[in-house]
Amino acid sequence: MDETLFRFGDGGALFGAYHPPLHGAGAEAAVLFCPPFAEEKKCSYRTFVRAARAFAAAGVACVRFDYFGTGDSEGDFRQFSPRRATDDVTAAAAKARELSGASRTLLLGLRLGGTLALAAAPRAGAHRVILWQPVLDGAAFFNRTIQRQMLRKQLIGGPGAAPADNDAVIDLDGFPLSRAAADEIRSLDALALADAFAGPVSLLQISHNETPSRESRRLIDALGDRLTFTVVRCEPFWNRIDLADTTPVIERTVSWLKG
Amino acid sequence: MTDSAAERIEDRIKHMIVERCFLDIDPSTIDDDDVLIRRRDIDSLKLFEIVVGAEDEFGISVMGEEFTVDHFRTVKDIADCVRQHLSTEDAGPTPR
Image 1 (cartoon, one colour):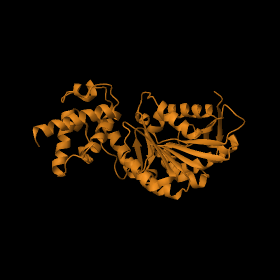
Image 2: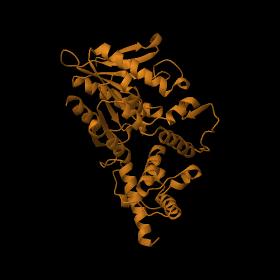
Image 3: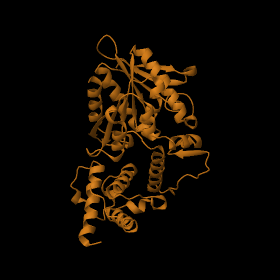
Image 4: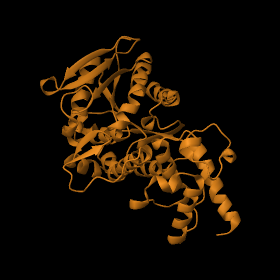
């Protein structure tokens, strides 16, 4: 695989991987992957790599990267914040254009990464945003994250209590999230963010059946003709420790990129 | 709640579990008292998916102190939780 690892951003604090297109003279468009949050990022890492390689094979340049405070980028997870991550998306989009020579940038975000892609899209000069099962309501997402952690702790014999309201740092299954970042996550509203982005949006619902979910219908209703919508039946791979077959997700997205 | 309605809730839960957890089994092979974590290879992530599935399926919200593993160990536990919500919220099951 012809992947190039690089550092960028202020002082080279951010880490990225560039996947050049395997065919053709150059890329017309570059896809920037916006990863999800905490444990969901770990579980989806393999799918992001597979997708980037599939897109490159289809002639589309790709960049994967880590937000500040996560992965191979500098900083501690306590320093992660959605606001900072949105700035990182903007910087990574510029880097994707620089590396690929592409004039158009597509932001592809999974779960909270989709929400951050929508938040960054206007400033990042995105041509289009592709959402893989995005988080629409930050408060609901955060509550679910806490509930999931409570269940897990109870299953291993722990008390499984919710974190105290006055904790300065919230332990999310080993990810120490600052209270300020938690508040930022709770305030995220993908519908409002999508409204502020004038470009086209593609929504891929990844679910156990092929019926549009309540959340998908909200986006469909809000964006109208700006939205392309498809459902693929696939396990929620961002919530799976074992490997899930994400081929339908990748193939559907390739067909969007080629179309 | 009639016996037939009670039966239907358990069956709907079994179908939901098989669908949401991508289990390659006939829903009717799940017994009401099967401990899902032991018998059906359900981990904490899939158990959470089942809770969310029950909320979606029956239009209920499981909140606060209710959110304990004890409420979701078996299909019977989940059905009891659903019935309690449906009776206190005075709302019938939502159609699939």
